[in-house]
Length: 181
Image (cartoon, rainbow, N blue to C red; front, side):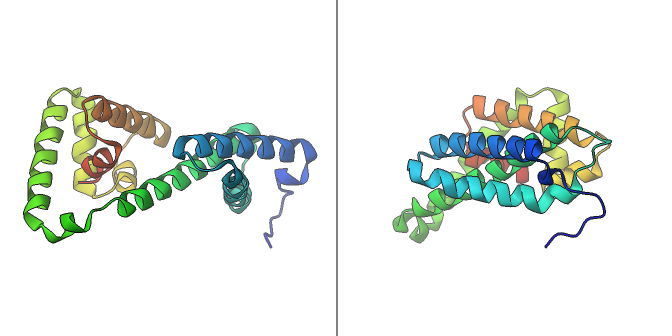
């Protein structure tokens, strides 16, 4: 059980309704994005609500509204679920013949490197610096913490970086590799 000195917003019916509505929207969107059966929507909603409950003690009314907090937390929870789904789908789609052919991995890595370099030439300098920082730190989180930008600005720029890499023809999994390598 969570112990907190001030009452959690979830103890208020209006705040609870805001949380339920956001979780329903995010779960519905997630089901559509990953093409899960509609019956999985409840599971996703419960996962999103559980994440919100675990983070509710971090809510600070002086820093923002409950609605904004719920939006950020439910978005993060849904993206975490989506990333897990994409990872498991990628693992399921690996052909056993690909695993047996190390030369194929070298060729794929070389092609990815060429694609990333080509896409990088079209990036503005600020996004190139971000890509370098991520590679240097070894993770997006590390790059954000090591930088001087506020977190919100950093993650807005990261979204732009990912969108530009995707627009350059890199697949989302390759974009994550490019951003983390």
